Image (cartoon, rainbow, N blue to C red; front, top):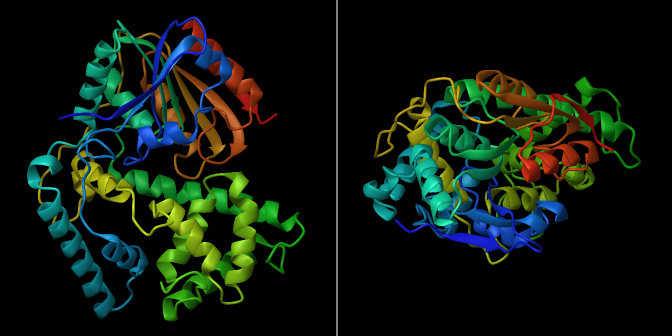
Amino acid sequence: MKISLIRLRATGEKTGSIVLNFGGPGMSGVDALKANKAIVSASVRERFDVVSFDPRGVGGSSPVRCLGTLGLDALFASDPTPDNRTEVKQAKQWAKAFAKACAANAGKQLLAHVGTGEAARDMDVLRAALGEARLTYLGWSYGTYLGARYVDLFPRRIRAMVLDGAENPNQTGPEFARSQQLGFKVALESFLRDCFRTKGCPFGKHSVSAALRRLEMLYKRADRAPLRNTYDGRQVSEAVVRTGVMSALYSAASWPYLRQALGAAFKGDGTYLLGLADSYNGRRPDGSYANQYEALMAINCLDHPETRCPYWPVKGTRFTKKVRAEGSPPIVVVGTTRDPATPYKLAKDLAAQLSKGVLLTNDADGHTAYRGGSSCLERQIDRYLITARAPRPGLCAKT
C-alpha cells in the first residue's frame, strides 16, 4: 500500500525530521499541513523537516469511499434521536446501507487493513525512510492514540513524543463516548457562561440551565420540521443543528460564530449552523466531501469492534492492554482542562499508564493545546522537541 505524505524542509540547519498526525481518525495530514504550515513554531521549523501523512484509508492513501455527495448529505441529516418504531427502522436502514456501500465501493480487502495498529507500523517504515534512528513525533487527538500504539510496539525507537489532547488507548468505545459526552457538556457550559458576558448573546436569561433548555427546544423544533436554509436546498434537520453546535465547541475562536448561528436559528434560520456542520463533516464548497467520515468509520470499526455497526463487513480487534512503554524516553502528554473531544481525565490516565509519562496541563477551553495561545506551554514543548529533555509536570494557563 502506498502512503501519501508531505514534507516541509527545515528553514535552518537541520537536526532531523518531526512527524505529525492531526487527528481524526480520518483527517488528511497532507491537506492539514498544506493549509497550516505554521502548525509548529518557527524554532521547530528551523531545525526540523516537518512531515505529515495520510494514514491508510485516508485522503491520498487508498481512501475508503462509500457514498457520494447526495448519500452523505442525506446521511448527515438523518435523525440522530429516533424515538418511535419508524425512526428506529430508518436508522437501522441507514446503518445497513452505509455498510453495504463501503463494502461495495471500498472493498473488504481495504476495510480489513486500515486499523491503527497497521498505521503505527507504517509510521515506523516512514521513520526509517526519513533516515531517523529514533522518531520525533507530535500527535493531536486521535494522533495520540496512534502515538500510543506506536510506542507500545517500538518503545526504544522514540527520540521525543508529544501527545496533545490525549485519548486513553485502552478505553472501550462506549467508555470513550461517555467521556466525550461529559467533555462536550463542560465545553458547552463554558461557552454559555462566556456568552452571558458578551454583547449580543442570543440567550435572554443568563442561566446555564435555562440556556440548555432553550437549546433542547431548538433541537426538538428542528426534529419536528427543518429550519430554513438560504444557502441551498438542503434541510437543516436536528442532526445538522446538533453537529453545528458541537463543531463550534472545539475552539473558543468559533464561539462568536456560534453565537451568531444560534441567534439566527432561534428565529428559524439554520443557514449558519449548516455552514458549521458542513465544515465539520468535510463538505467542500463544490459539494464534494473529503473522505474523513468514511475513513473514521472504517478505522473505528477495526479499532473498536464492540461498537461497530452490526452490518459492517469485516471484523476488528480491540486494543485492551495499558500502554507502559518500558524502555522509552520521557513522553509528554498534554491535557486541556475544558477540552470537549478528549477530556482532561484521559490525558491524566495516559500519563499515569506510561512508565515515563510527563503530564502538562493547559487550563483553557477548546480541543488540544499546542499553538493554541499558551506561551508557557509552547515554550516547554518546543524545548522538549528540540533538545529531547523533558519538562517537569505542571500547569499552564493561556497567556
